[in-house]
Every structure is written in structure tokens, then in C-alpha cells.
Image 1 (cartoon, rainbow, N blue to C red):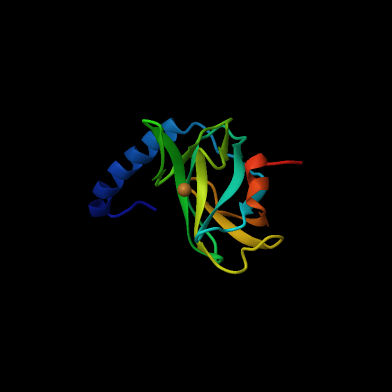
Image 2: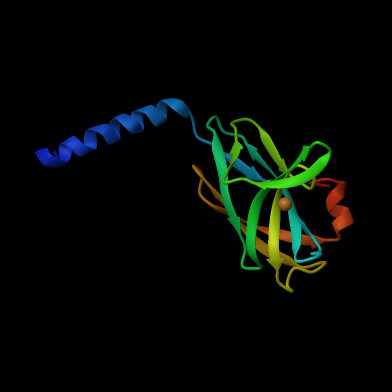
Amino acid sequence: MPPPARRGRRVAPLLALLVLLASCASGEPDLEVGTARAGVPAGGATQITLEITNHGDGDDQLVGAGTPAAAAVELHETVIDDGQASMVEHEAVPLPAGETVSFRPGSLHLMMVLPDESVDEGGTFPLTLRFEASDERTVEVEVVPTADLLDGPVAE
Ligand SMILES: [Cu+2]
């Protein structure tokens, strides 16, 4: 199905761009999302811990997260500057091929803003993760005492 001549001009640069992108990402990402846990909220916020492993041979990025159980889930990173800890928000977090990225307090983390009453010890809620290349994934998050959260991302 040859396109009309006028459209052909617009398609050519697009094809060039696609070829360029294809050469950057040699393969496909293959993501595994580990056990997700959230701390009992305090002061209108809490954190979610989880690990994402990219078993594939192509890079990906976490570009967003959300849940009906909170106003927002933000991608944060704790940074230490001059002995002062502060949090910066990321638009996206790289998930390089062959690597595991951990989200946990004190480093990269998922911040839940204004969690509702369903986010209580022993409860669960769904968390949807959105990726640049892979399909979005929804996982069940278990709510645990915050002290347990600090033990480590996955204890099994
Ligand atoms: Cu934060």
C-alpha cells in the first residue's frame, strides 16, 4: 500500500527516527517486579519498597506509578548534600538491561502521597507501574509496620 506522494515526505523522517531508535535499544526489556510493601502511613505519606529486575537485553524506564488508594505515587530519591538529606522527584527511573533497581527508604523510593484509610497494617492495595517500553504492570502491595519496611526490600 504505497502512500500518496504528499504523505511520503512526512513519513520518511519518521522512518529514519525509528531506525535510529532501534539501533540504540538492541533488544527487548523483560521486567520482573518483586514483592511490594508499604509502611503504615504517618503524616499523610508513606513509602513503598520493591525491586524491579530487567532480565531482558533492552533498557527500559519506570515513568510513573499510581494507585486508587492514594492521591499520588511519586518517584523520589533521597540525596545527601552537605550532610543534609532531601528528596528530589524524578520524571523517570532508568531500568538498564540485566540490572536490578531497588526502591527503598534512604535512596530511590516510591512516595505515596495522602494514602486513604485502606492503607492500614495487614491490608493490601493495587499499585500500577508504568514503563516506557514494557506494558504497565499492576502488583498487590502489602501494608506492614514501617520498622519492617526498613529491614530490607524483600524478606523471603
Ligand atoms: Cu520521598
